[in-house]
Structure formats: structure tokens, C-alpha cells
Length: 390
Ligand code: DIG
Ligand code: MN
Ligand code: MN
Image (cartoon, rainbow, N blue to C red; front, side, top):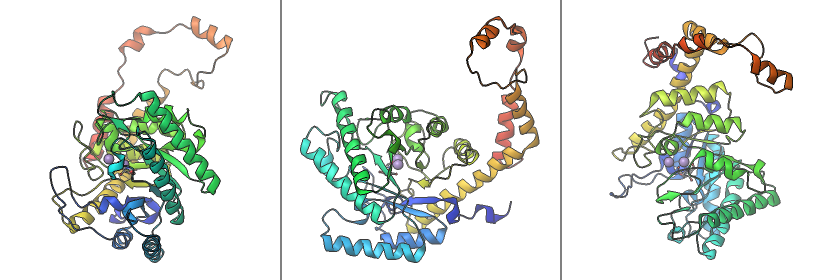
């Protein structure tokens, strides 16, 4: 395959948050190791690297204490940089987790003033996102949770969460913003336990909202991995429900804090099956890398990180095409697809006749019980493609 296949281009829809390549390497046990990179320079560098877009929390661009005049200047300069580079802003979101006011949550705080502040901050941030052209609005409830359930009745928290999202859906409708809202599940960190911890919890919660069609998901590799789940299974369920509105790509060692590593850096096999799923599904959404460089890195390392995320995605995309074209693999897959079928369409649609026929159908259980599925061979062939020997 030519090197060109691994060169990121805007049509690949790779995006990064300002906070990702702008991460200064602070952690709970250490001060920043890198100087901040200006949003304008981030736009220039991401465009150089072949990205499609850049995303932001409100205060990644406009500091909380900025005056209206400073806000307008900052936004103008940012928009000029976007226009010059061609970079888009597909997604925006609100920082509802840094301000100490959010220490008991934002939408689900026990303090009604905080719940009002969270709505105010989110509406202003939605305004900013729309000014920049954002179409997806992400809600990551990083502070929505507890360390002790003595704090609040979890049913009350769900009601507050729903009231906030219903209110903001109405705001988007009233403003004509046309946003698609994307909930981002995470099981814990920074709260001891975060509400809506998995894709399944979020999908169920969406069904209780006043405008469920407006609300989907922004699942993240690291967050499902932290919960001990197979991320591709969760993404497949979101796709099946028509709710994969956005996705956060990174990597993560199970049983660790949220590491937000470079895409594919830990589990290339898991990353392969995710890329294969997205490409086989012809999903056209943003491939957003919600990740950051190791704390050990300087600014040069930051751009190595960003380039690595996109390059790994494209290498795995080529491996998926190779898997789909591999003769022996497709023979094995073909046999599995037709296994046990009697030639008729295997979608089990009910009819009384079908039920009676099924109840009386003779089944060769001895044969069924004795035949293996050749998954060892199929997985070995997969590994050989990933290891570059096939
Ligand atoms: C963390 O995984 C969260 C925040 O960085 C942001 O609000 C969201 C959008 O990608 N992901
Ligand atoms: Mn994360
Ligand atoms: Mn994320």
C-alpha cells in the first residue's frame, strides 16, 4: 500500500479538541510540563497535519472572566484562523467541570443556583458553538455523580439531568440552532461514580427525554474500557439505534485512571475492530481524538501524538480493507454466514404457521453439538494481517 494511504486528509474527518493538543501535561501529582499553545497556532498546526476540524469547550477559547469585548476579539481571531486554514468546528461542548462551583455537579447539583449557572453557561456556550458552525453538541457529565449516596436520591438526580437536557433541547429549537446533542458516558473520574456511566445507561435515559430524536451519543474508547466493556459492542449498539452522533477515539489500559492515550497505542486489535466497524458501516461522522500526548512530551511530541492518532487510524482502515478482501478469511466468513441455513431468509419473522413449523422441525442436535466454528483459524488470520505478515 502506498504511503499516501496513510496520509491524513480533510475527507477522513479527523478532528481534535483544543484541549487535546493543548493539554499542558498537568496531572493530579504534577504541575504543567508544557506551555499553553494558542488556539490560532493549534488551528494552523492541525490543518498542516491534515485534520478536518477542531472542537472546543467554551473556556478553551474564551476565558470565563473575559469581557464581552475580549470575547468578540478572541472569537474573531479564531474565526480568521479557521477561514485561512479551512479547518471546521464540527462539535462544541461546555466545561461544566473545572469551576469549583461545579464540585457537586452541574445539572445534578443539590444547589439550585448551580443548576441555573450550568444552564446559563451551556446556553452561552451553545451560542458560541453555533457562531463557529458546530452541528453536534456534546454533554460529558464529568461532575454529575457522587462519592456518597447520602448526598442525593439518584432518582432526583436523573430528574434534574432530564430537566436540563429538555430545557436545552427547547433552547436549541427556539434559537433555530438545529443541534444534535451527544451524551458522553463515563463510569467514574473525577467523581467517585458518574451518572449515565455506560452507553447502555445513556441509551435508556434518552428514551425518557422530551425530544429523544435530538439526542444521541458520543462514546469514548477509554471510558468503556474503564468500565471493563468491549467498546466495539457498545458502538455497534449505538449504530443499531441510530444514535452514534459523534465518537471520542483514544486508548486505555483496563483498570487505570482515564489515560486518554494516542489512538491504538495500547490495544491495536481492539482499535482494528472499531475501525472495521465504522468503515464497514460507512459511518460518516467525525473521528474525534479525545486524547493527549504523554506528560513526558514537549510540543514536538504533541504533534507526533496528533499525527500518530490519524496515521494509526488510516493504517487500521487499510488492514480492514485487507481483511475484507482476504480470500481465506472471506471463505470462513461465508461459511459462518450460511451455517445451518436451509437457503431461506434467516430473519425470524413470526407467523402462526412459522411457529408451528419451527416447533415440529427435526434438528440434528448431534451434528450441531459436534461442529466447531474455526474461530481459532479466523482470529489467527486476523492477527497475521495486523502483524503485517498477510
Ligand atoms: C472527556 O472525555 C470529555 C471532555 O473532554 C469533553 O467534554 C468531551 C468531549 O469530547 N470528552
Ligand atoms: Mn476520557
Ligand atoms: Mn471524551
